[in-house]
Image: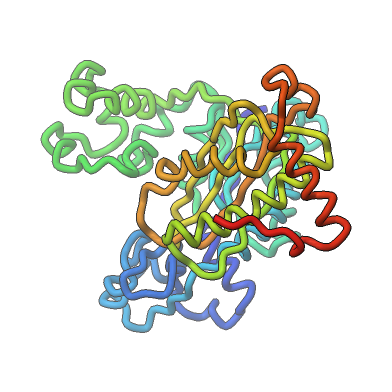
Length: 378
């Protein structure tokens, strides 16, 4: 069975409408934050029909439709809906990949005896999403991730599109260029006009060497996508053991001292947890979310592996400038430690471990007299 792309169109808008049914009767958009300059991240079909698109600023969208209702994004709410949608997906296959909020790639190989042929399985997934979340879903069915995603976009806002193996080029040929994911961040409309390219089928006729000459490395990607070629497998969810916790932020900020101060408190909590488990961490994963909903992810090696708060925090602080490149306020941080090893393995790296002994003593004091009995100052 092929790969499914399951997508709930205008996910943030539809989740907001579930919370507030009165919003169903008006053109609606979700903005990254409360500001006239905030970009829109999701728009309703009614707003889309008025020419309003994601990426427009609130002030620009209001010029197109003064009655447009705009609400600020609520990421925790959308994450909860995403988790509920994930629970539906997991019922049909363990081989899934979350592509974005409200969207999943599913590798349905070996499930035909359980759920029937592609169209039957797709109908069952749609029905279950509707029952569990009261949301619509579009599903693209194809031999690879690229074509399945495009197929789902073709049948928005609700439907199933099944592209038989071998028919990828015929399916793509009449579609507009905008359906190709590589063009989402490639401004090249004037170049395509010069090449007399209006549809994906026209792009197929442009030689690879010409595309590379004009677009560089992107030319190879344009060539592959226009031919419906995609060799990427569905990336399975990570199963590596880890511990993690959300960093408690008092307010949305890009102030380094405030963010690092909050991060230190989380390091203390997770470091104590590592020591209770008699483990050390070889890697940290720092995740964040700007107020404009741009995600941040940084994998940070910890050398040598440690469970001491000073060593853990030092590694994070050294990577901080790489992590926070954009000076836009952060509204969410999460810290995880992974690459967990038994504590005794640290002996091979370092015979004397004064830091670990120090924090083991502090853990005992805090367990007896409370966390406030000892505090670390700068």
